[in-house]
Image 1 (cartoon, rainbow over the protein chains, first blue to last red):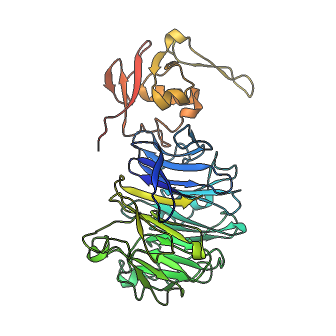
Image 2 (image 1 turned 90 degrees about the horizontal axis):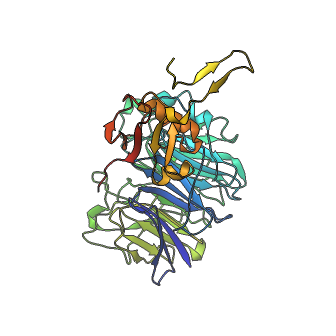
Image 3 (image 1 turned 45 degrees about the horizontal axis):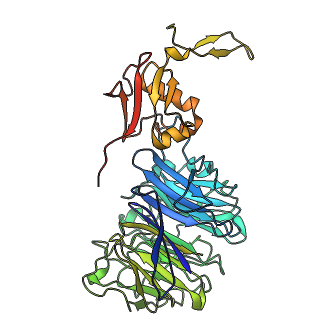
Length: 355
Length: 111
């Protein structure tokens, strides 16, 4: 049985089912509230939800019980009191491989860490007070830490991606941070400014767990791979119909694998009304399109950066993505064929698969 | 110093303390839903403040779990939170008098 946690503009939907069978909505929570991200920490089973209440502000909630039961607000998810900025949104919640540490990324370009299972959180001061911060620029969605890639077995090593402040690396548990942007080319900047630019609009970043020095990155124009833990990047977008897109998903069993959903540069919807998921199994040297079971005409979908996920690996790899149109599609065979999971949900911000 | 203001008495490391005003000198704050839950229930709470802003800060001080819900980290009233004093819409600088009734409600929303 697969559990899908679907964050929507109108709250959390939980769907249960199996590839090839029917998925059913089994629970809801935070009905009517913008739910930006939800995930289940696999070791403890604890559920987390990032909710941006239009009234009471952004918050992380958690529960160990029923989804439609009691949730508790986590503490510490805020900026320093008395400053000139307020937390706007939590974009991502990521657990380390043993569950002992969790990280949450948010707007304005902030990282929180929890060492008590997610009940309390602490702002990462080194990133918050980084001397380059005055030069960071938001994109239209804000200044967001949306991608957090822990290093398996070494929670002191992290890679982050910030829109639009590039890739950030730490090897000391977040005590210090350095850029990892070499090789990324921002076509949206004047050529003279590209070499030294830090306002780099990374859309998503993922680490290959079996080869942790390898990362994949979907950029605001470009798909990149790093083989040196994010220090340098190589463009691997050749062969894709568009180098623009938002999410990236990897097969954990294969460091040479990546899946992307290209969208047109101009309107940021699936090109020519066709929904295609593109797969590489040779680290980006070539790409294969998968559309079997996906809409192939008059389908202009927006798939946001947190709205594509996987469960399992290798021959058991399942893939799921949701669109702002409220549709969810799934694959039980690593992307070769697809089926409709749901079709009439509110606009989908995040999809997380598990259990 | 107005009778309803906290009086700071004494100096030095151990001598300074605050004398809390009597309940009848405070405004009554009505909370609903999640805010009431965070404040421990009971719906109505006696809180002191000369203005709406002062009262909201005092409310957060009294009920720590409310910190960040009504005022953001800057101390600014959240954009879509409405405060009423005796049924009238109020601003952060609206004066608050003893025995006033304060309500804190989410703004009208749609879509």
